[in-house]
Image (cartoon, rainbow, N blue to C red; front, side, top):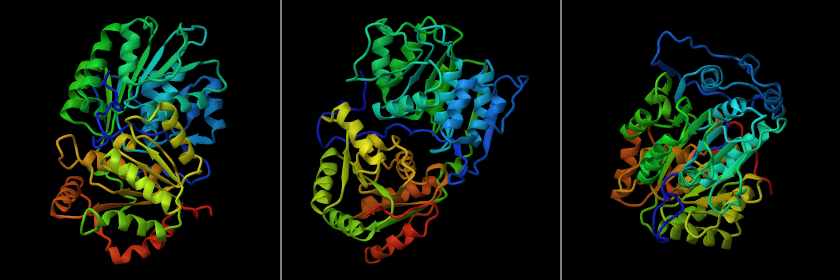
Length: 447
C-alpha cells in the first residue's frame, strides 16, 4: 500500500497532500470567481460542447438540485460552467486543470451523484483521493449535496470500519485502500459507470499510487467514464492521462500565468539564522489578531516543536502530520480548526492540499517547500499559499529564509511562478496586523 501516511521517522518530509473541499459560488457575494481563462480542447471536434450559467440548465435530478440550493449555492463557477455539462450530459471523458478554490470538487461530486441509479445498491462511482483528509472532505460534500436523495456514499480509507458487503453507490478512498478492495473483490465494479482521479499530479509523484491506479483499470467496465483533475500537468500526468483516459475526451486547462494566486500578498522574511526562525514566528503571533492561519514545517519533528512552543505562548493550536497520528486524531485536529476552536494549524506537507477554511488569512512557510530530492518545489509552494485566497479572496503568505541556500531556493520558486515575493523586514513585523486587517473579506479574530 502506498499511503502518504506511512513514514519512517519524525525527520522524514511529507509530500504535499490533497485538495480541498469544493467551491460553488454563494449568493451573498462574499465569494468571487477567478478571472482565469480556460483553454478547451476536444479529441472529437465534431462533438457539441456547451456551458451553463445556472444549475437549473444541467438537468440535475430534482433532489440533487434541492441539495445544491439548500447549501446556499446558486451559480456555477467558471470551471463548473464547462465541466458539469461534460460530466453529466455527455459520453466524453474529462481532463480538467483548475487552481485551488475554483469549485472542481463540487463539479465531480455532482457528476457522481447524478450518475447513480438509486434503485441499484451497488458501487457505481469511485473517487480516488491521494490522502485520507481529502477523502473525508469529499465524502462530506457528497453527503451534504446528496442529503435529499437515498444515495449512500462510503468512505473507504485505512482505520475506518467497513461493511462486510458493500452496497454503497459511491465510494471515496485512497488509492492503496481502493486497490486492495477492488483486487480482492471486496468492491465489485460490475456496475461502475464513473471514476474520478483527483489531484493527479500528486498521484504521479508517488510511483506506488500510480501503479495501483493503472492496475485497477482492468477491473472496470470498458465504457466507464473517467474524470481526471490536476492542478498542474507534468510529463507524468500526461502519461497517466494516456493510460487511464481514453477518447473521446475534453481537456480544460488554465494558462500557466493564471496558475499563480494573484490576490495573495506574498512576502519573505530573512531570519538570519535557523534558530532565529522560531523567535520570528513567536513575534508574528504576538502582533496579529485577524483570522486563522496555517504554518507549514518541513519535518514532523519541527512541527511538533513549534506546536509545543506556541501552546506555551498561549495560542490555541491544531497539529497535523502523517506518521503515528491516528485517522481519528487527524480528523479531530482538522475539525477543531475548521470549527474555529483553534486558530493556528501547524502541519507538514500532508495538508498542503487538504483543507478549505474561508477565514484562513495567513500562511507561513516556516521551511521552504522542497521536493523529494531537496530541490525547490513550486507546485507545493503554490498549494501551500493557496490555503489562503480561497475562492478568489485575499490573503497573505510569508516564507522564512535564513541563509543563502534558502534564499536561492525561494528565488527559484519565485522565478518559476513569475511572481515577485517581496521582503518584509523583521523590524516591520508589527505592520503585519495592519496588512491583514486591510484585506477584503476578513473578519476580526474572535477573542
